[in-house]
Length: 427
Image 1: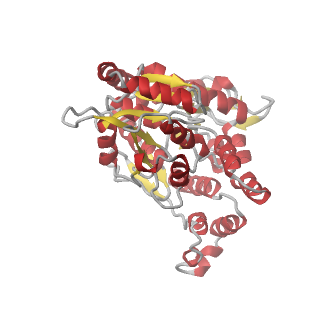
Image 2: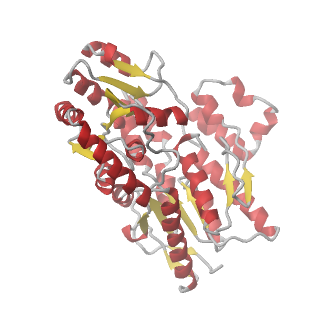
Image 3: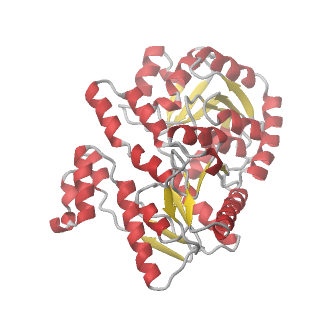
């Protein structure tokens, strides 16, 4: 459950769908989720994780076990693609999921609908060709990650690597041919329509969910009126951490920044802070358990989200659920999220002075922060709890199934020209 955003999304959405009375089977590859007793069955699909071993330069682990295992077609594809700098896992997982579903169907299992979580591999089209409607969740298209990768690249060779790594062609091709695309903000919906050329009418914003029982205020945790908190990776240009360091320089010396990020010495935030003379005011936590993250949200005077792009902005929502106001940039979905919860202040992105002014203004007004935090918490609970997200998701399922019952077997999909056909016989 705690292995990244997709793992959290899978675990909580499946739980709440089950509570709504929907029978859920989960097909998942490593890292495998926490136990899911609410699921009817969990199908653990194999994966030798060649790409992860290649990325970590652990070449020996790539051939651990029987070398002949690597020679099976799908394993060999993953091994070769990893070696050449491609990301093979979305395609390979989709094929394994397709084969597993076919085996289950032959054994008599039936499903009304398949929900993909941002895999978008070609195997999904095989599932759809079986007559099962398929929807997918795209938090944001991989084009966003590729642009960030280009921003990090320092030479032509690295740019070529960024170009070939992301399977954007496959994912956009598949997304255009599925029954619906679910996403987590209007900003992401627009980006999906523009970058993946999915018809806007097939995209549904159901928002993203939050465990509002876990992320909650605690009056027993004292606020540090001089601490600002940021949750984000400095080596991802989209997170805007460098702008925050430049803003810290403009704040009173009593203000210190806690950054939840990798504390390895190679993290660029340390060199940025040294050059700007604020090293003593920076605390980088390293990876922290979820309970510690919640404590940090509860302790901070406010949370800063200085991003250059966010498809949703989970740290902002987590902070507001803990009763902590937010200063965020006008990037991606952040203005939507803050308007939804009325939980803070928006400033222009990439402008340290504007960021520093907003932070300083909020720190001077503890009464306003306390009142805003209480109001914001209630709004988050009413709109972004996993229960609410599951209800909206189930509504999309019902919409797709109703549409499927009322239309002929051959149906126009959201391909670019709108004139390609996909077999979609009614289940």
